Length: 305
Image (cartoon, rainbow, N blue to C red; front, top):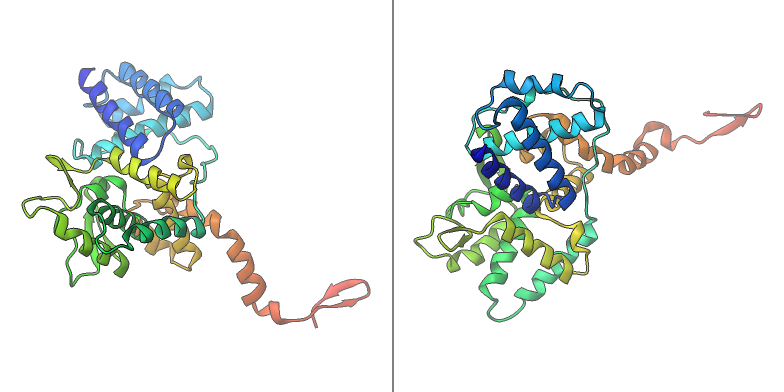
């Protein structure tokens, strides 16, 4: 159980830093994971059949409780995959009770603009501070490319090539994906790069390693507070959601968005379509062939000519 406890601690640290998970959520996830570990005799080496057996142990629980426990295990094994500690996710064998999936937290384009206005003010001096240049590069990449926090902080020093407007990343499950990088983000990285020690293997070094997820989380929160946005509404993951939401609002194709975000299942990407409902209604009212046809009353009924 000692190995399980250490990995669960690392997983919950990621959930706090990347997802902005609340204290109650973290406590619930810890209880769910430790409880599952006791039933199957340890999570680290558990097989798919062993994890599937949890469904029987949870048979008397409410669907919402089963959904939460299964979600905790899927996220935990997804984290182990991403960290290279497991090559599979045995929690895919768990049931998926029919529950309403929570909608992602989002920021308006105006709120995101306020973050970049503040960064621009910090850089509008003769000699910008290196840490402000680093912040600019981090936020440009985070919002401009929809990178996961782990992917962002662990970028290699030469991840961005001057003649290549994209990154090739290896994400969850060792799946590679191509991520377009905007001209703004490339310019921000170019401005930061001279401050990166030549011997550093990381684009965002810190001590003997790279900037941690928690430090990125703290920087994003501090920037939000300085921009007048409630810090609890903003996290690296919320900016990833904003990237997806605003691209979809701008007309992005759902399949292209799935590829950029690195989602294995398009069902995960479809959660963002809720924000586009108003725009779709407006499109139907303004672009549909019937929109230009006038209506007239015939015997008290409304009909088209």
